[in-house]
Image 1 (cartoon, rainbow, N blue to C red):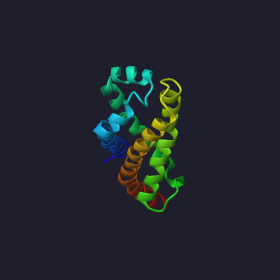
Image 2: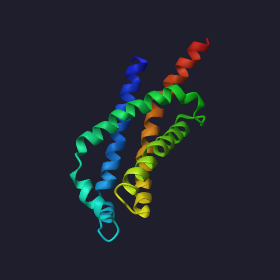
Image 3: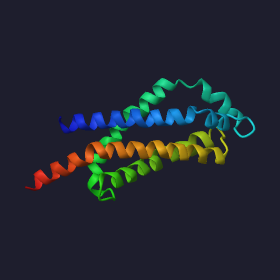
Image 4: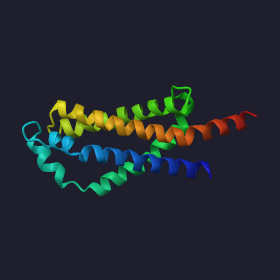
Length: 154
């Protein structure tokens, strides 16, 4: 399998699995009840979010995971950690920090007026999905990168 194919496959696998985890968590009755409770949630959020088309949103995030895989291969030597697991955890945290924190603040908190406490709950859930994405990407790509870098050095 070529490096490009490995990047695409690892991105798609990581994207599907992490989005599946996020979907299961966000659709679970306790989380859904809490996040959509009118006593806590903004009216704008409750009115807008049910109208979104989930398929393009989810598909876009899965495809974005291919970019995360590619960036991992570019940056993996500088990612902290001596094992694929440590690198994956750091990479997942980086994905979360650069994508989800931004989105929660500027879209959900600022635009949809979601209360900060609910943003924090969502960010904790999103962190779980991001960590899983980073771990999967690292597991699928890091050993291959070690072999390629070792062969280039010889």
